[in-house]
Length: 454
Image 1 (cartoon, rainbow, N blue to C red):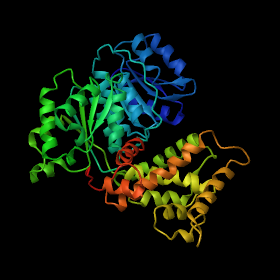
Image 2: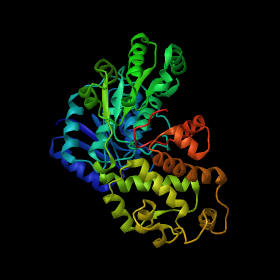
Image 3: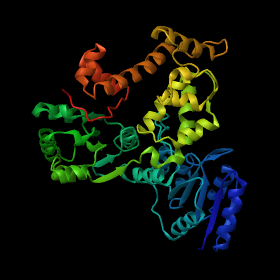
């Protein structure tokens, strides 16, 4: 390699390792722990490549990318970050960083990318201000599988291609679709999620297209569309035109297997699968589970109050070893529930096992006592939640928070008991079926079994 590399990272060890490796490769290196110093070097015309961390003592490396582009159009920047979320990768792509790598990074891989950056002459980048991070998206992961997914999402964000998002229930398919929309050029346009029933008749199709306009139209669990719905969908895609919405589809079923079985149209499959994003199951990225747990608990602390929560060492080992058939959604629901019901700052393994139904509730502190009425059990857990605030009142909005925490498991258990039949579930709960459908959508509840609108 030949050229001058500017390295900015507040970790002295990383600066030393990169300086030694790049120098051995034939480069000149200037290293700093200050973003201000880095920007001064760039303004002075120094450097053929920048390798920068995101969080610096005096600023944010991602937020500096547009300024770097204005000062030195064509100067490649490789972003390295311990903030291993999909938003970091997307923000880096939006600001047209040359590349993005999560920490801990593979040094030989970084050296190869640096060599490509030094050899490749880049076009003057378009200045794009990073959009605020959507904190509600639990799309966190540093494993190779998730990082590869993040990069692909960033590349297809504004591509004029249909996107098929596959993965098991609870992996975050709908969140991926939402992230693509929110960070794309269509972000100001509507984001519409549709099911088979929304395509009924000519009126249904025209209404759907009218709602979506030039935004994004997500076909939810497209593998469950029957032959009539598939036929209507093909016709809709044929007449939609270039001014129509971008089409994204989600599927937890294997569409290729459905093709072979003859239950899914081949012409529809090719229309929907311009690019396929496969979201890995949680058991396929176990190294991300502790990171996800920390993220979920931290977000729960911000939303619900009650002080900082953490998993005990035994609990960490358990969540990492558990298969989590419901994936990230199951992990999130379990931890959020325990933030309300657990009385201690540290959540134990026994409490998690009890929440998952793997031990008898009576053997776990805080479980249902023998002969206790449901209202008494609920009152006991609510009293514990108030006690957690040490004599202070919980944050405002406790009524809606508690109702939501109770409503989600109630609907999930009722759906499971009725095998996903929404008509039977609505009858069991004593609510209108349309009300149930709205709650399933609003609360982001997924039926784990094949569901039909009966």
